[in-house]
Image (cartoon, rainbow, N blue to C red; front, side, top):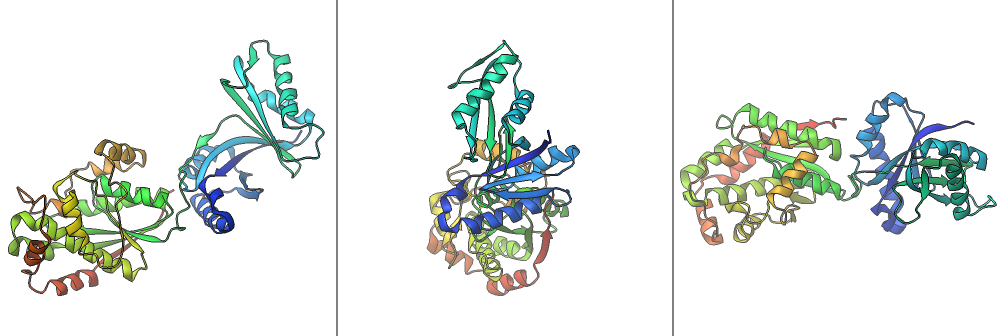
Length: 391
């Protein structure tokens, strides 16, 4: 009997897309193939299923690790593929049999040419395993083990016993582009991850205040972006030199309003960059009430500086523990905790205003002479870094 191992991939929400589903599938397949760059394999698409075949068994774990990070995939299974016949199924299913305990066989029969239906095939295969092992028993409702048999129209069947969760969500690139305000902290990388999970292609902007912040702080953000690429694909990172603007805020504006004004200028620059690069939204890592600049009033005053684009705040209802858990999951936690401060900590006031007044914020910001020129200079001298996906 000819049989071989394959990896069966399943997608989730794409099923809901109706007539547009092919567009989402094409992007998902592109993302899967990109994630498997450098690995030899054969990709099969048939009847709403994807299979990875003809790969070296030594790289199976690497394939699984990469594919599980591709947004749009719901789960995967390592299966045995074999020509469909009752005798072949009986021989192959023995390899998936537990040694003791309860089990069930679940069959999906797409090949209607067979003379048995799904339930009859399951009963036949389950009975075969019981005849070989007296320590087994069948439990159709709450089995300890489940063996799945998928009989397809192409003359082949697939047997597997384990489903591994994948990243789920929607394929990156199906929901436009977003400009992420990326710092070296825990929150903004998680915000980028969550928006990519909804299909958004991620661009990023980082504000660097050298020499008040070190080159290590800049490299920290580059390393964080590199971790995100495992989920998001390639990221274009724009590093904005923010030193002169931050110094001007410190010299001209009320101390308690410095953070408010800084954030207003940051989102203004981010919006200008977003428009230049055809991004349809800004993304921030703000979580309501986490810090002084993240109160409802502060967010409202900051938002006023954004003229045209929506601002997505995917963490707005999350607490710090949830954010940290996600940071650990996506492997940015250990980088974010490195003690290299970014520009948000420079000239930090002792008592930042919690409920800023918009008129006061505008009046204080207006004290900065030639601010528009400073903003244009910062954008004109931006460092454009392409961070290629790390697989």
